[in-house]
Length: 344
Image 1 (spheres, rainbow, N blue to C red):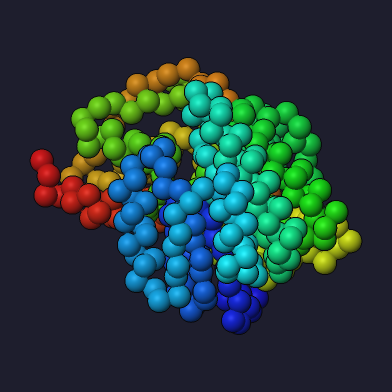
Image 2: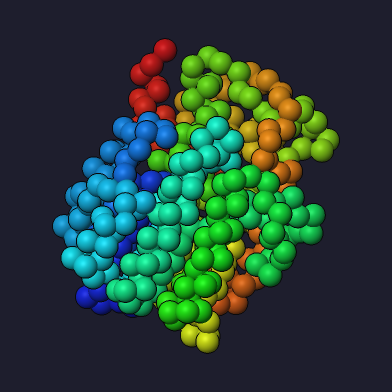
């Protein structure tokens, strides 16, 4: 299947365009001359300078329009749809983070529930060819059956963040049923790579190393029964999304959900060792993290593991980037972006 979407002269609306996945998706589509309207509220959940750095790159494309705003503002979303009449909508705006949802639950309801409701309402009154939206592997909770399949029972979320993502899937299904909105949910599995989110473990570990501080590992120091994560490189995530854009469901209820994961869970400690090796290569000197082991945090799960059979069946694609390759690319970017070779 050709990974280029066959949507000539149509407009994409991407929410969360200054975010990690939103940036890479926008860049991929812009490089193929598609018209992108990107919106983002540029909140300070993490360093806003990184969001502006992403936007600076996107602004170099003549078919990119950026509008600062919040999807939880219904009038703002209504006005965007009426003015730009998007054909394909990709909702990536959300308050992310499992642990942060324990401290600041209000923002999750505001952004992930009310915000997504506003997107659905706008699609209801301004019909679109396809709505794609970010869900999460967190909806699987502590499911023991692996790999996780889209048909698995997912009614036992471990965090408010996971509950909001499950709610998004139910809301999208309902609107697809009632108003025949072609909608596709995307269950992402531990996305990593250059320009990533600083709150994610690999990025935070790297920050801590350069601050001269130990990294915190939330597995009780239990190396034998280590945490497993299905780490998925950003470019694989983008390839999966771009291919799925082309195939809105044609079922009576036009709603589907797909895992996008690497289908190869890695031990957290192996991932950390691989990151140390990648940074060693990028810096030209040996890197070893000082480590501090902590109890597993509330809301965390022991394993994430994606079945990608459905994704392969529908679009002929399986993420394949190894953690060695992906972390090498991240480490090189980090060292270059923050000029770490010039700093003592």
